Picture (cartoon, rainbow, N blue to C red):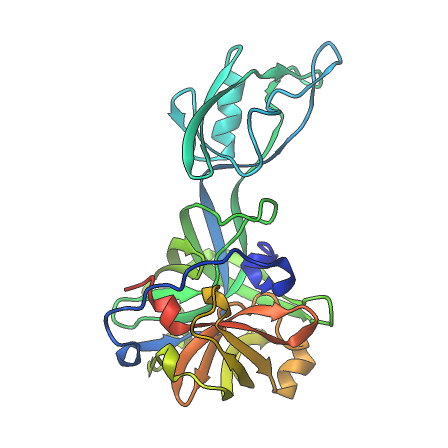
Length: 340
């Protein structure tokens, strides 16, 4: 159940907006002790407001087609309020439209600015209900990989890149979210030109933690105390970006029956000044087991820890579409910039 290519794991063909490298913690990264992840996790996110995916026509009682939201609402708008009432979900928006009169006043966030617009609902011919002709979304879900847990406070980081909406391509503004147990059912192998993906089912009854931040360099939150014991492994030191080097490495991921395993890889390029923080490393999978099972890197492996010389150095973030055994990674130093 992919959230979007950029959520599960971002193929380079989809691209991403340039971003400044995250600030590094004042505490020296190599002194930070973290428990490396590698477990596949289910991710559920509730957006902060109602995301507009597009607008369309409504057939009125007179059999004419009307476009009440056209040139009023735009793809990517976030509807915050209707007639002065805050909207918690799309059902609340539907109720506001139902109860509205000749016009509905909406407070909308557009390009990080809040504006107010007015839309006139149309009584549709099918059932006589009022409609404004918009497609909306208020939540998303999918599978990713846990990068680390901080044993000092139970906080975690995952993915190494943000969760973007599949239709608008924009970073989701998150009101709340959860990490839940995921049962891996199989892996669709990556092939040249076609990224594969981890396939699985989310068990929303088994909540492992809460998500508080969705950023360009990962999702962050806190784990609950009742998470599986294998999540609480042995902590290891983290490496500063300047100490990461071209050479052998190991990645941790859960693609073989959902069991976390270590696979050999090679860091082929180190760029501490890359314009995109989630593309500072280029890695290649050298382990034949992973290549045979998954074809290399697949969607859902985003966040897989990269370990070199006994230190956590980063996480997998993107697959090269034309070379699926190769991909980008982010320095752990950059991911820690959001948690300190």
